[in-house]
Length: 262
Image (cartoon, rainbow, N blue to C red; front, side, top):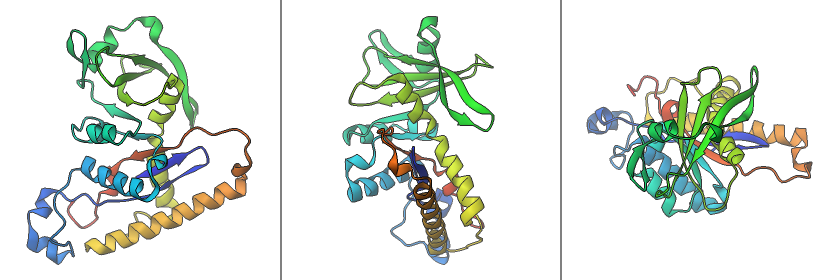
């Protein structure tokens, strides 16, 4: 789990995903140092656990926004939990995600296809390695759903669409939703930074506690570097109020285990 803000970003929590081939084999788990209390949990469930720890330690103000990829956005259990805890979110969903309309459920791609052309806006979602990352964006209100649908379209390949489910508790401009949606890439960039600078993936452990020790120390070192860089830049002297930070989850890589068969 990464924390992304205008001043920097850092990995702030971690969980190791264990498939049922591990959790159903208790002797194998015992040999790897995995306790009897560790049971199978989906990646969205692991994300929920990390959010619970964050809220417990720092309160609701610690999570102004949450974003994640389709594996989390499509999960039927995570969204209701976020709604119940009043957490604003923008999560990617599949093209066949269903939204409630006055005429019944409709797929995300159907809603996007029926939208008027004038509804699209060309917005930048930040700077990339080749300059500004420009996409066309469309925000749709299904009409009978507590969620909104945000659609991203490539300006080079108009048929390439991405869909996001949005939930928030105050009026928010489209540009803010776009910013949150693209914060998800912050976790990928943070992974790369931690791999290069603090050895996040430089391990060959074979036991459960050893994996957590290595990952935790690497994350701590990367966070220290992020804070030091922020102080050296003097970002704290800015006179304008920065956009709200976002917490983003992507356990696909963090949940890997070399030599562990995961």
